[in-house]
Length: 218
Image (cartoon, rainbow, N blue to C red; front, side):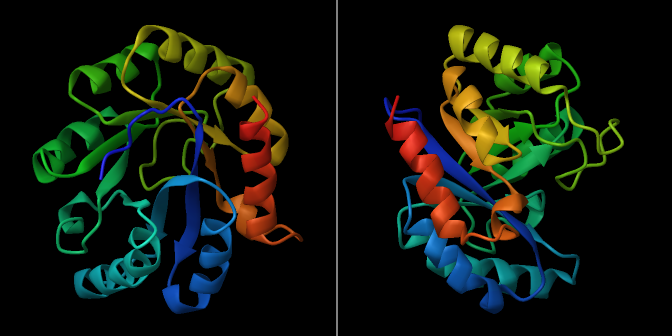
């Protein structure tokens, strides 16, 4: 299952770090039914390998039957056995190390770039997409940012630059619903909705529906 750019921009969901997928599935189902979702990035709490695979498979059942790509946050070594469509890697070193485990059959996504040059290197190495604007330690890689996020204006500039010059799809990470419209305006192919959507007073489905409405209004 490929993440290919389409005329209509699409959503990309990021889960909280999961220990008990069964308890999370009703909220995920609510979100998946509320908008056009291209992919779900599953963040798994640390556990032994067998447990990680079982958790990923449990989530995959709900995600893939909707023709949505299931990606793991890191963990490229278990992607195939977990039935995942691919993995998202944080930082150029982690991405380079994972390529042999994922290609050619699975999606290799890349983020956590410290510079435009890092993003270009990932593109040249055949990344299936690049992500900008995510917090430095949101994903499994530590990065150098100490958890700080790239300034949003700078992230928007990078997305505009990438969308204009490169064919490889790009993902803009929204830290709140108010960031969806600015990210959309950059021409990003996908807008990622992060862990915050599961913690809000409104249901995740309501937030996804509101974001999807913004994308459809373009």
